[in-house]
Image (cartoon, rainbow, N blue to C red; front, side):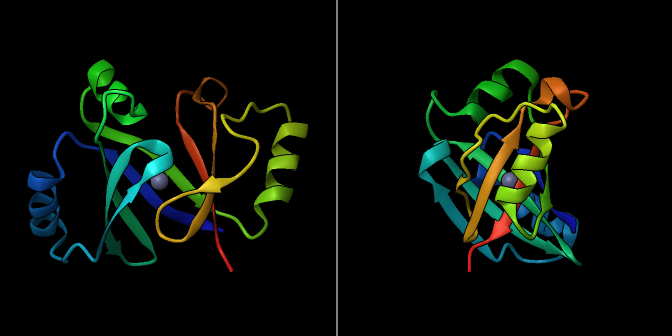
Length: 132
Ligand code: ZN
């Protein structure tokens, strides 16, 4: 439907939140821990879309590993979908590999799943559906 948010991997939310508040000229409106990913997140509204800063809080977190390998930077692009189960089915039929085929609880009251970047030109894609 639209780009729901862009996820940016950061080492420290404590310094990146004020940085992005200055950059975007808008306050961070929400911070939230996502236990399933071992991350803390911070959200900014940018028109129709959002920017999500993601910080790993454990060495086991995928974000922690991402930063160790590649440094800070754009981590994923999230597209909003109307029916996440139908979309997962469609993508699997098209030959894509998903990291999780069963949607899981994400930040911001969303169900989410991720496509394996190996099959999407190196871009980690997240699908998000608002929980009703
Ligand atoms: Zn995200």
